[in-house]
Length: 149
Image 1 (spheres, rainbow, N blue to C red):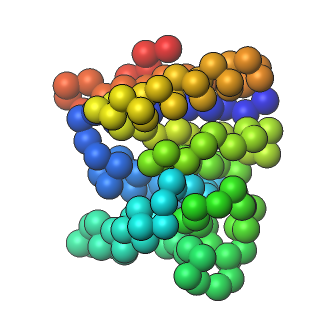
Image 2: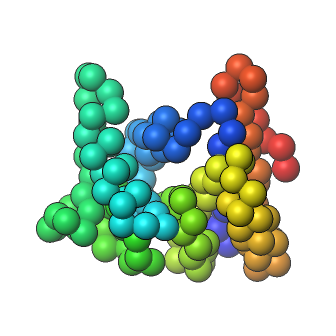
């Protein structure tokens, strides 16, 4: 069974949280695929990952690039996994994929968006019913991630 982690974003936006989580994946030698709900959002995050830090960037590719299998991080709007990632992130309205194909799924949702919260709740129920190890994370006032469930 896969680990399915739900990250409730209400203190920091996706643009701040996602790069930190992707950096942790790379530090651990994990490959990741990130699925977005729209082409526009995928393109915006693609550009952001090249410039979010002055001292570096996150190596990644998207459908605009070639050699997907060589990319440690792949950005997409589809349910594909061309870089053979073991970790899948879903954000901005993307649906929870079949978790059995991954070791870890990370669902990032905007806690200030009622529709996003409802989708996350439905995905939580689906993941729990399938027997996956599910956890729910929320940021404290100090900015640290705390496990809430």
